[in-house]
Length: 98
Image: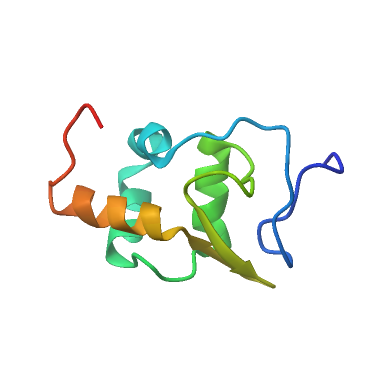
């Protein structure tokens, strides 16, 4: 792992050189069971196995990625924007072109 990549479960986020995908881009590539977990647990700490699945598709989280929220040692959260988007998606409020 290069120095610019971070462990999302560490103390904080640092810039990295991976592309920053938006949730709208990586969501459709996620396994349906992962999507359902994110819907059912929206706003909760994202466990490492779910975060691993997201980063396998979206790349390593960066501080400027719109879906990255606060983090603390051993904890990773999605951003308020991502939480709202997931809720809208779960309620079929997101149009296909967003």
